[in-house]
Image 1: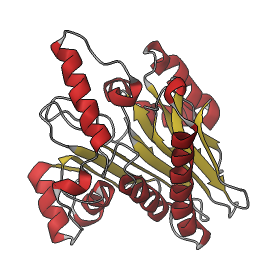
Image 2: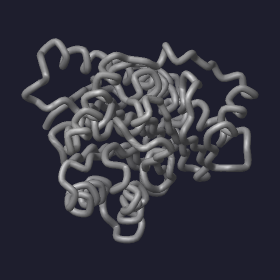
Image 3: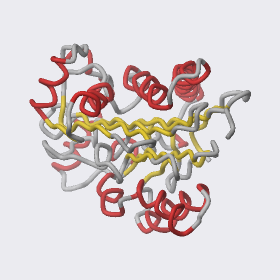
Image 4: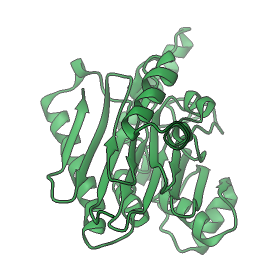
Length: 309
């Protein structure tokens, strides 16, 4: 078996439209994605696990206010921030997830605490927060998570709704962060985190914390992290569907991922994309919208980042 590693990340399929992206903003996104790849690759270079690598990468994404997770999460219609996250490792299919949480600096670490400290897969609300406190995870005050652009986006969306319209800008409608990895021992893992949709209904939960929809990992097939219109990914069990096409139909990672994103989810224009890695370290990153913040790195190769096609 190859001793090489592979890592892919995404900062969401809800990119700024190409026409509105300035050179300065693009450079900022590329720099942030490169820093995230470096955080995850540092784990893999030292022989660390895929699970540790995706956790480190997603923590870095949650810490960056550019992306819709952790610091920089979007606001609900009531002006609150409710975050979801999940982790899964592919060797034994252990998984942990949280939904509707606010306070932990890194929701992905809380999801991992569910996996490692309980017999459950998903916890929500106060029960999840209590676990985080007992695990000694760092919590932050509301000011830490607030960013002016996300607040302004909420106000603009609410004003549009008041006039009888609905915001169809992918940059506000959806956005998520995630990472998938294959470590030197051939183990796979996936992690995903999100603030959801701008002006979402309080209590809404998308695909991110639902194992098989927005997050999935199985050493025998692939690890997947999704980003986009969560309700569509939920209905199609999108992440698991990619794995199933590989296991049951003999499709390659690229074939399976592209079919799900471009054919199944393609029936819903601009619904999003996925990042995925298989047991051989192959990477696929298809999307059916204008852009997806993304990057990848493999053993001995330079890291690459991209936004549009």
